[in-house]
Image 1 (cartoon, rainbow, N blue to C red):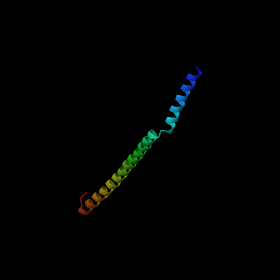
Image 2: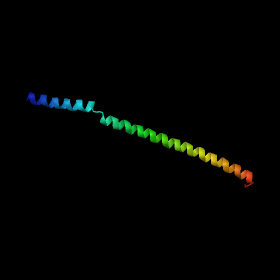
Image 3: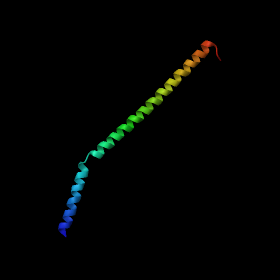
Image 4: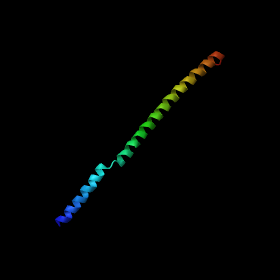
Length: 71
């Protein structure tokens, strides 16, 4: 009976050691987080650029309207 308990505990310890030293899941998670941050930075950059471009075109339209005398 003690031999069976010892074997079961030994298998569990081996499995736990394997799970602790296995880095494949951690690497995939790190890449996933990196991709999420890059996507967020890209979206924020495009949004900021879009707002700046919109403001530029509004100023250009106002300048042209006043230069051409269009109300």
